[in-house]
Length: 185
Ligand SMILES: Cc1cc2nc3c(=O)[nH]c(=O)nc-3n(C[C@H](O)[C@H](O)[C@H](O)COP(=O)(O)O)c2cc1C
Image (cartoon, rainbow, N blue to C red; front, side):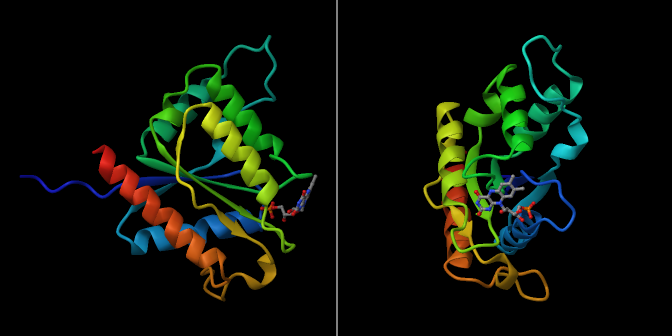
């Protein structure tokens, strides 16, 4: 019998900023995922050219492309900055746009959530908001979230996540995603 392909995990970051600490966290979790034998890929919101949603706009082509890309993964990790205790507009806008077309890319994938902040609070408020949004759209979301505070000391020179409890959270989150993906196959 043919061996099953390794699970594919997409990484979608809510910050497009050069030097973003959330991009840094995304890369560090991707490294952990690869070490666990997973296939990884980026879902880069910058490439889909999404205007701010309002109801009179025609759906831009990028929305369907983004949905297709998200559906190409068994699981998706969303890594997000916290803006005033909530979601950054880039991320909320992308999720809202896609939800006007369908929700198969949300309810058909296993999801993990992560956030990185300069201060110690690790994005607990934005992770709660993202959890609510994803659950509302029917996501299969794993319970462990990778909150990473104190970003300036969280990574080593190679960009690996060394801060605790964030590093343990990342491992647990990925292990839970692997188990759920396996159970679905
Ligand atoms: C509009 C705005 C609101 C912010 N609100 C919060 C906040 O509520 N909590 C927090 O920890 N950091 C907050 N920050 C600081 C961000 O965590 C910080 O800028 C971080 O570097 C953004 O993530 P990035 O580096 O991945 O772009 C805020 C930043 C901006 C620009």
